[in-house]
Length: 190
Image (cartoon, rainbow, N blue to C red):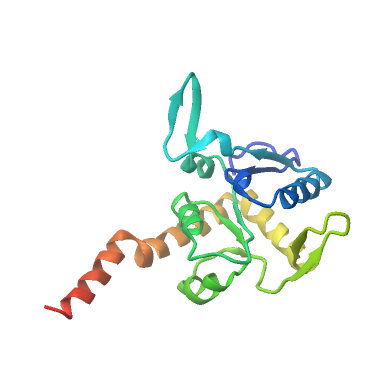
């Protein structure tokens, strides 16, 4: 959190939402966020692999989207290992996430501190469009929202959370940790 007075306006920045192939789902998500009064910024056209200036227009890197964020949401129920998860840790941002299967089996046990939406959900269908979407118990969502606000407005807690996660990632998931693992593996074949 940048310390500015909170106006109550929530901004969602989506650096890759335009890549979602299901356009009806994107429309559904837009409507849901609009109904909540959130401001949506779809910045896919402004994001590239590196920061450059072309034709007097800036193109930002994906990293820039982390830098401008106060908190990273990661509510997917199905993911691979979680590159975005690691990127947010490296950017030292707290995360709100759904406990997707790989997180539960491979990541959570390392001891990261995250704001969690649990691992239980149901699938619902929007009647007018037929769009399927995931729902989580509203009590859990309310609890997670309160936790987000607590972390965002308590700079000490914010720092403690992101530094804790950064140190765990450095110990277990860094290039140095990978090098040690490779050395152990290759030592068996010497």
